[in-house]
Each structure stands twice: as structure tokens, then as C-alpha cells.
Image (cartoon, rainbow, N blue to C red; front, side):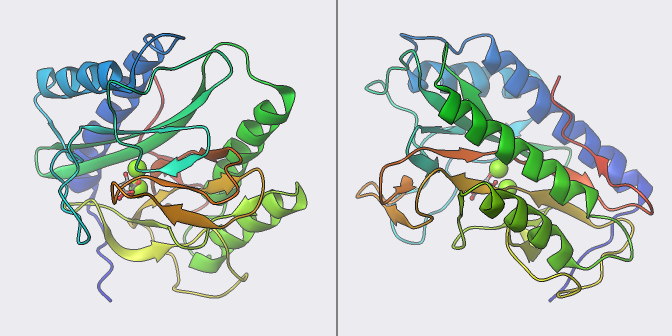
Length: 256
Ligand code: LMR
Ligand code: MG
Ligand code: MG
């Protein structure tokens, strides 16, 4: 397993790619409202990313089980956990949640971040799922410091989410990120303190809790992309790309 440590020059390039992801999500936030289709959101993102000189990494991303990803962002509504495919039929309505996962390639380096947005007013139950998932991401990031182990990140995410009665998806993980969107190591959202590789300054990681309101089990839909909860209860997904530092991780994909 090869885990690349990035130089400060590389981190600067990673920051640019990731800030563009952050500003794309901020741009999308302005368009999220009842009546909008996920196809329209994809158009906004694709144009915004290309206008800023980058490539939307998800477009044509290969799928070992089917056709390449047809869009530039993943739009995962309600019970869809990840990899929702934007289309003209999915019209947002009041009370929905939508996780938008976005990736950019800029000057040879990758950005990757996800945010779960509310469409209008959502129930208190759903609000809590989003709050806990976002807090879990930050607890994971707090543990991504030099000298800790990879398992410390997952342990922090898992214990916090499970103590709130939520499910932690096991089949999908965070990852190293750099010249490739998915590099070593895998960054699970569960784990044991002190287990896994030692974290070193300069490791760039995408930390991304995928948390379910009900049971944690997921299924792949016939389009071979969409992954949803089996019990069809909602799921949330928050992701940041960070760089491991001494004392405190630095978030590269700042939102706005
Ligand atoms: C991710 O967060 O890793 C995504 O952006 C892409 C994927 O394959 O889920
Ligand atoms: Mg992502
Ligand atoms: Mg990712």
C-alpha cells in the first residue's frame, strides 16, 4: 500500500482544486429549492467547474459493473446514500434532503467534498440526522492529526453516530486523495482506536461519513450507480478533503 505524502507545493494545488469544489457547492446552494431538477443542478455545477478551468472528475467515471457516470456531480435525494444520478425526472420538493458530492481536477490535483442540503423546511428528525452527520465529520477531522492512527478517525465517527442511534455504512469509505481522486489508504467510518496506519503530516484524506437514520444496510439500484438504504429511510453524507498536520488537521475544501 503506497500512501503519498504531499509537499507544501502540492498541498497548495490541492487547496485550489478543493476550494473550487467548495465554491461549486456554495453556487449550487443558491439553486436548491422545490421544483428544481437534479439535471438542472448538474448543469450549474458542470458549467461552474469548467468556467474555472477545471474538469468535473465524476463525469465519465468508469463503473466496473455498468456504464460510466453520465453527470458531473452526484445528487443523492432522501434514501439515496451516494452516487445518485442527476436526471430530469427527479424534482426536488419541500422537505427533501439532497447530498451533493462534487469532484474537480485542477492542475493535476483533485478536490472532493460533499454536503447534504435541506430543500425548504425538513422535519426535526431529519435535521438531527444532518447535524449529527456533519458533527461526526468534524470529530473525524479532529482525529486526523500526525501521530494518531487511521482507526482513530473511524472510531470517532462511528461511536458518535451510533450513540445517536444511527447506522454507519460499512461498504463505502473515505480515501486518500491527490493526483488520483481515490488513493490509499481507505478511510472507514468505523474502527478501533490505535488501529490502522500511523497518520503523518502531508497525508491528504477525504473523510466522508455516510450515515443512515435507520438500518445501515444499502443496496445498488438497477442503474448500477444509485446506492440507497434498504429500509428506504433517509441518509446523510458530509465530506471534506483535509491534510494531516501536527496538532490540527487543515481542511482544504472549505465551504464558501
Ligand atoms: C467520493 O467521495 O469518493 C466520491 O466523490 C466519488 C465516489 O466514488 O464516491
Ligand atoms: Mg466525494
Ligand atoms: Mg470522496
